[in-house]
Image 1 (cartoon, rainbow, N blue to C red):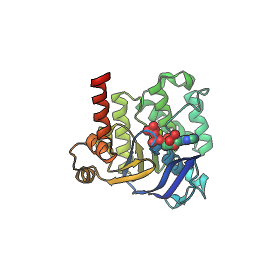
Image 2: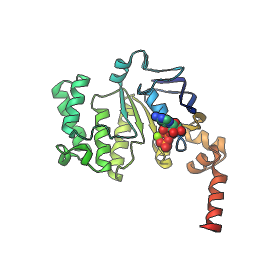
Image 3: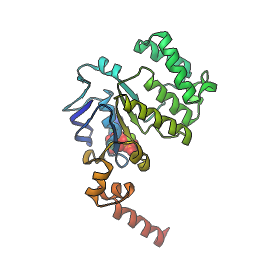
Image 4: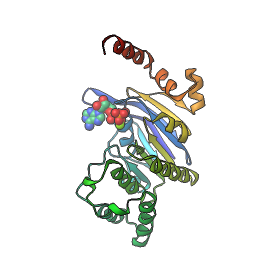
Length: 253
Ligand SMILES: Nc1ncnc2c1ncn2[C@@H]1O[C@H](COP(=O)(O)OP(=O)(O)OP(=O)(O)O)[C@@H](O)[C@H]1O
Ligand SMILES: [Mg+2]
């Protein structure tokens, strides 16, 4: 279970995350939606211990992420938004490095890596520098890296980005399987139909604050909209802006 309790983070004068709280149960997929710059990635970085919150706390399976960072890292699998860090390693180097950092026994590492390498079809690229891989293949390596140690919670920041439809489907099936095994999953995405398809509950974040939370049906009812895109536009008060851009385009574009 993930408990996010009143976290806050500012960068200079920018209040990126402002008093955000939510809970994700075991076996639940929670989707974090929000406009660009609304604080999703910052929230996910605080949950994973990559950034410290200025107040409040995050507790995962009874482990306080800030107080016990090493224990927290053992139970978290994190796919970050950007994957530039390991460009000068090959996938094999990276998987071995993760195995030794995480203390995964060699035979277990081999069998888990083999499963994911086959699932995501990256056999051909195993000895190629990650920096030279295509965007989608880099993303697959990042996803595998996050899952190798069999974490009990999974945090994914726009993880479907760049995956082709088959690979996106495979990742979806893997997430459903993990959900069935009782893992908690937090997923940020801009792909609203995907959020509708996979998330049990959604949190809508705007300007650093959670402005609405619930199941898709609850959010549809709250916003009096029948499709997820209109729910998003209505709750983030963006509909008028979209119309005025269209009007301006007609007049000037
Ligand atoms: N390291 C940083 N230094 C300064 N400002 C930052 C930093 N990281 C994030 N911010 C600011 O915090 C705010 C929230 O950014 P964040 O990356 O969390 O948004 P996001 O919801 O993930 O956006 P996107 O949908 O574009 O990925 C933005 O105003 C951003 O410019
Ligand atoms: Mg982001």
